[in-house]
Image (cartoon, rainbow, N blue to C red; front, side, top):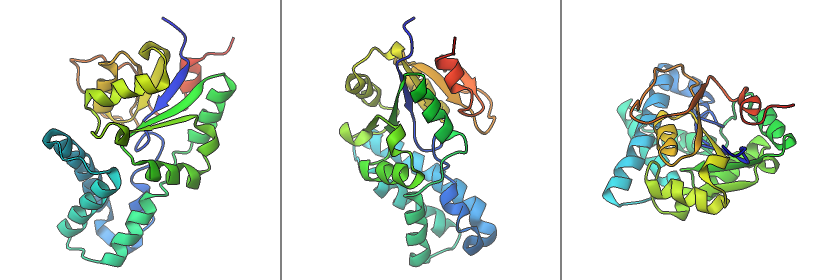
Amino acid sequence: MPQVRICLFDAYGTLFDVHSAVARHAGELGDAHEGVARLWRQRQLEYTWVRSLMGRHADFWTVTGEALDFALASHGLADPALRDRLMKSYSTLTPYPEVRAVLADLRERGLRNAILTNGSPAMIEAALASAGLTALVDDVITVEEVGVYKTDPRVYRHAIEALGVEPDAISFQSSNAWDAAAASDHRFRVVWVNRSGQPPEYRWVTTGVELPDLSGLPDHVAPRG
């Protein structure tokens, strides 16, 4: 197989902690904060899939807001000011602790860092800037360039075309098993970042290497010596 030339990352849940937006406001949410965080993420993903199946695309900011509205309403929380604070926090999600060092290490080893995300361009630009990661990412590819969400095959084909290399020269990292499975189906070299230690899924597709976080990625894709 050819050497890996590009490390392509999912953003939300892989580079950025999607629950950090709620964690910052846990005091305001009280006992509901964990439930709100889980339901917000569940519905956010569900709405992308439903919109894709229906052919009714809206950008990720819109979908994220729709999902938050449902999560808050489900917990009896109707506070427009709190909603606004939570949405603003989603623009500046906290990266996982190892992310900066891993991206820098990959760069030092001669690889390009890229992102393939459901997020809108403005969302991912804000997240990278707030985390101080902009200079460590060479390419950002969003589903807005295709008009449909992962796991639609058009998203992964577009990423291959945009990066200009064969898929087996791309190591694709995602914490979402469904995303890892879809990328594997398009011949990417896949790393499933299983942060939550969940059991394997999608056994009918080869989902590649499993890592507990991104710390071991540089040695996996570009071992020294």
